[in-house]
Structures are given as structure tokens and as C-alpha cells.
Image (cartoon, rainbow, N blue to C red):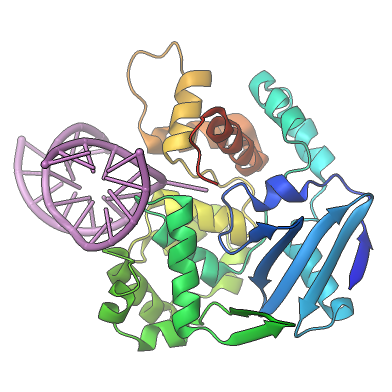
Length: 287
DNA sequence: AGCCAGGCCCTCC
DNA sequence: GGAGGGCCTGGC
């Protein structure tokens, strides 16, 4: 067990339950998840975080965890840049401390390929099934979870066995993308350093990856804070809160271009707050 | 029963 | 270039 003192603004709940990542489970006041090959239990305590990790010891895992949680970013600076926008200002106040995760790109990519025409419970189930079938076991006391399988592993299984997991038509996309990634066609390290446009071009060349999915991957795993994924929720939020007067309909691509221009280098944070706010406004949200 | 979902891809205009 | 239909599966 280890306790981390956190002086920075942070809210674990909204960070882990705002649809960015799909392997966190909440029970008895703790979140349990699998990141960087570790089974992790974490909870927020006053003034900080308490966590367990396995198989790595907490001392060596701590920097990875903080990085994953997006703790390197100065949220006050982000808020300062965004809060001129009145609508965002109130969302920021409401969900203060919600951070953008920095996830592992490969898992993030496949997760959002799975997200197409789906919903969070199903996506979570799909990802967990993939791990159960092809990942490697990790134990922590009596708890057992499995890692997310690497590109080589997923490239080696055939599409039909993915379909059997209930992935539907996404199985073909996953299979094709896994092959291209394991062939070395995509270098996530490189994409993380590349420009937004360069990374976008590369990602949308993959099967099952369009503008929305690519922007999710860039925002949640490739350090592109201006990335602005436009899904149905953002579509609604912008239409209702920003384009109320507009007569003609704006396309999703148009929305993304507008948003990056309007919100600037932290458009991705704006996206996350708008997304979260608009979803919570609906009753029947499935967390 | 039939529609629609955290989209993408293909076809056709 | 952009609108429209099809696509797996599950839930209402």
C-alpha cells in the first residue's frame, strides 16, 4: 500500500468514470483496474490517493500511475485558458478536478474501435472479454484480472474468434488494425511526438478508425490536448449550447474544426467537460 | 417487434 | 464532399 500526497486539483471519480477508459470497476469505495500490466486498486482519501499495485511494487509503479492519471498537467492553467467561455466555466466549476488520462495507446485504440455504435457497458464487456481470452493473468491476493493483449497476440488470432466474443462487425476492424500495428506500420511513440495533423492522418488510415475514434486516441493516449472527438453527446452539447441560433446543420467535421479554433490548444479538455456535462444531464445514462 | 446505439465504410450524387 | 444505407449485437 502506498499513499500519495496530492497538492494538485484532482477528482478521481469523474476522471475514471467519464468514459475515457473501460477497465475500471468501482466497489466498496475502491477502483480496481489494469494499467501497464498491473492490477491496481486505488481510492481518493483526504489530501491524496491511496493505492496498491501488483506485480510491481508501489514505489516503482507510482510515477507510471501519476502519469496515467494526467497529473503532470497544470489544470489551473487549462481552466484559465478555457473559462472565458461561460458555458465551459460552469462545467469546469461542476466537475473541477476531472483530468484527461494518458492511457496506453494500443489499448486505447482498440477500445475506441470497439466504441462504434455501442455504449459504455457493452464496450467494457467487450474489452474485458478480449483480455480474458487473450491477455495474461495478473493476481493480487484473491483477485485475478488479465492484461490487454499486445498487437502481436491480437494479430495472431482470427477474426471469427473475436466475433465469438460478441464484438460484431468491429472484429474485422480489430483484426486488420492489429496486423498493421504488429507489422510496425504504426509507431505510437512517434505519433505522440508528431503534430496533430500528422497523427490524425496516420490513425484514420487504419481500419475502423475515423475522425472521431482518431481524436479519442490522440486525446486520451497521444498527448494531443487539442484533439476534439465529436460523438453524439458532443454533437448535442454544441448544438444546444453553442449553435442554438444556427439554422443550417453543422457537420461533425465542421464542429471539430470550429471547436479547435474556438477553444484553442486545450480544446480536448473542453471536450471532456462538455461531454461529461451533457451526459450527466440525461437521466438514463449508463455508467 | 422494431428501433437505435460513444461510428465507419462504401456507394452514389 | 457529403448524404444515406448497411453492419453485429444487445437493450428497451
